[in-house]
Amino acid sequence: MIDEVTQVLFDAADTSIRPRFRQLTKSQISEEAPNDLVTVADVEAERLISCGLLEILDIPVVGEEAVATDPSRLAALGGGHVGWWILSTELRTSYPVVGNTR
Image 1 (cartoon, one colour):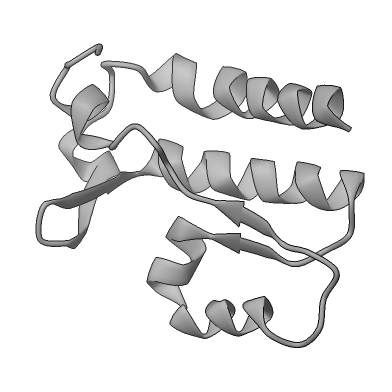
Image 2: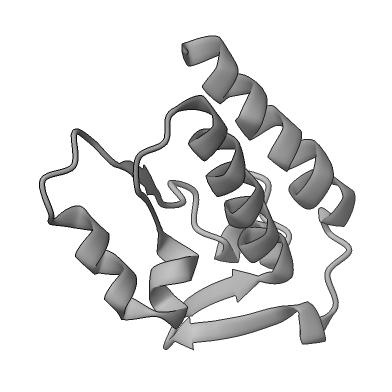
């Protein structure tokens, strides 16, 4: 399963993140909350990752960007499921948005 998850992540990066690196326009960047940036690449990558993970194991997916637009999605964390996919960015979006490659 680890190899399958890794492939889903690489595919999402190849499709949504890498082609847009340092090429986003201001209209493709928004602020979910003060100092909390989100890009069209973030949203698209999360959607692709969510779909890919569901194909691997059909358990609820709770994604950071999806919850930001619809907090009721957090309810998926209850309800006696055997597990959950939790999606959140480790590297803050603000780094690539401002051109920081660290």
